[in-house]
Image (spheres, helix red, strand yellow):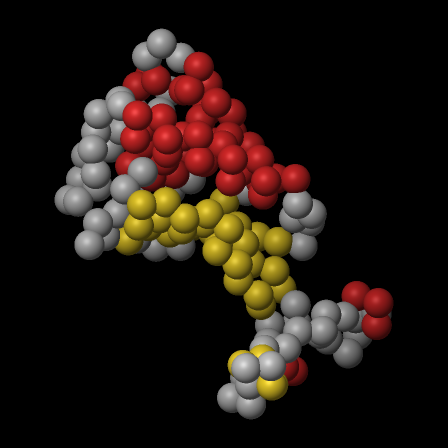
Length: 152
């Protein structure tokens, strides 16, 4: 129990008859090296990748609530633009360099949300977020949409 946070990358892969062949995706699911019969490849429309995961990184959650969710903290999926991810990356780097990071990335108290101290764990969450976002933003994300969700 506690604050778990996810950033998913969703890529639409449905193949339509009117789509050029070179734009078609070949997606299949295997189990034990064999095609998994209950999942029909022609019915797959989206591939969802969990590209970032945080646990009790409440300063990151607070950033999403304020910058993506219009202040609503309700455990729903929220679409996140690449520009917003770039801004989160910028804010994390700025907080790491700031003498008072609370002015840039404030913590957020909540039920099992973890520590609200500006300590080594706080810094570690920011550093890991920088690493994850830098790697993610280097990828080709032109066909993808991003969604953030938290649960507790």
